Image 1 (cartoon, rainbow, N blue to C red):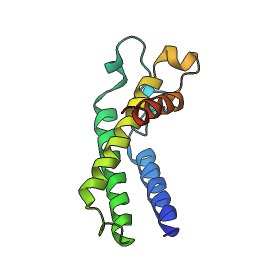
Image 2: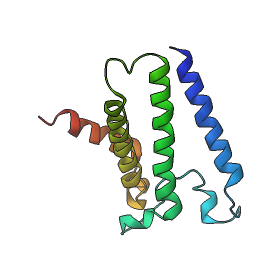
Image 3: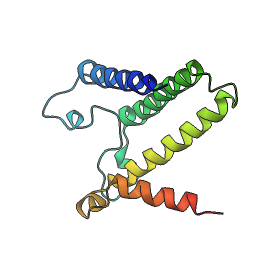
Length: 132
C-alpha cells in the first residue's frame, strides 16, 4: 500500500513534464508562467483568471488524478467496501475546494497581502468542518 503514493507521484510528475514539453508557448509570454493549468492572476473580475486552456486543463487534470486515485484504490482492494462513485464524488469535491482556494488566492490584492491559496484552503476547511 505504501508504494501507491510513489506510483501516483511518478504519474503526476510525468504529466507535468509532458505538459511542459508538449504545450507550445513563447518563453516571454504570459502562458509560460501558467503552463500547468490553474487560475491566473486577476484584479477585479474573478473570471479574468480563466481562459480556455486553464479551464479545460484544470478539469482534465482533475479527471486524470481521479482516475489515478481510483486505479490505486482498486488495486489495493479498497473499492469493495465503498463504490468508486463515492470516492470520485469526494475527490471532485476536494478538488473543487482546492481549485476555489487557488482561484481566490490568485487575486492580486490577496497575493500582495499574504492571503495565498493555503490560507483560503484552511479557511474553507474550517467553515466546512464546523458547519452543522
